[in-house]
Length: 531
Image 1 (cartoon, helix red, strand yellow):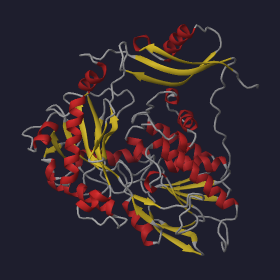
Image 2 (cartoon, one colour; image 1 turned 90 degrees about the vertical axis):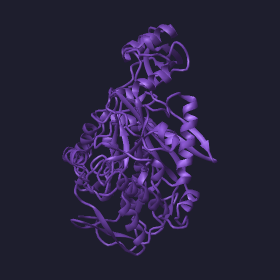
Image 3 (tube, one colour; image 1 turned 45 degrees about the vertical axis):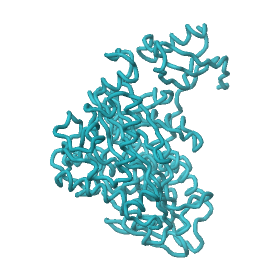
Image 4 (cartoon, one colour; image 1 turned 180 degrees about the horizontal axis):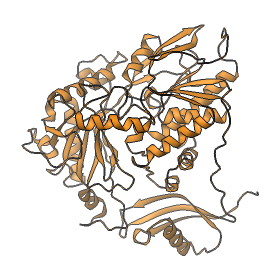
């Protein structure tokens, strides 16, 4: 079939009140560009609420013939092909597996957690009975941390790889087609597990293998490279390992260090989840008392410089829920998610401050220690649990009381399922961090009145914004200088920040691993890779 030709490109503004769905949007675009013929393709759609009326800004083009449907992924049989071991089934691990299949290799995925359906039961136990399963929780299990933190696909990672291809892959496995062009694409926690299961089914149909409830515990190395891995279920022979374990797998960092893999401390951000009524966020952004039905629940994005370091909002969840994300008993960790419709009455976001060598040193940790950022994180999470009573209840405070440095006598309604306990957060965080967070709240209050008011509840801590450690890898081969055949990958290795960038890094590591295998792998290797 001949290639399509672009008749014209366009960028138009369409009043939001004219848009009920994609079909009405396309009609409104054609009216504005005076084009009834040709085939319309939307490349990007984003809401501009700064003007009145509020408009959708749409970029796209008109083709002379219909665009073809998304090409289905080829079901290539790799069951007898050479194997690459992948540790972790989050976006980095899953997209690495898809890329390996495309390249004719067999992915073998080991995952410490459970399949999506079984994983739900452990989340229920955490929420209702405050029981933390160290191997199956919001962070560990099929799909990784993103599966139950709603699949936000917004990214600035265009330079890292084919973002649109990544989004189209999600669509091919059941995500809504609008994510390809939405300015802030989002799948939703209610939809994402189905997508993750569809990806697993495809990998298995192609001959790939999943080993759930299988935790990596050690490495076997010889001739300067990988020979096998040890797991809680036994030994697996492997010549290449893509290490995509996520930024909460502290035991993997310690295991890697014990085996001589180079690590460095990596700056990240620490703070709180701040929650407001969604109606208040709507008033800030849309300048109206009641949000019209044609507008989506509003979000915000804040960034300030305090003490020459950033304080900013992170992972904003319109109509969302604050989630309990501890991975060990005796710690409190928070995150946030939204369902696909974002129709809950409260909105939450991380409100965090950058931490690095200065913050670690001020808190009594040695900045030269590669684990200083991890130790800093763990100290806050454990203290939060103690201050809130030793369960999964989270320390919380009204934002106005936080600024006044006093414990709240009562707390507003909060979406955090295990419940919240009134705690003065000045007793939780290091003083240096708390002062920057407080100043950031004051700056946010000046921009959006009520942001740090009595309706706002601050829930702590938000500590898992990104990895506190970077697993060093060669910039050309993507292999660990400490052991050839190991490919540190994704968020956990310190090379991504979110679902899309992790997926792109997984694809990149898969190509590097394939090249390593296809070029003969390691000198001195004898025998095929096998289980």
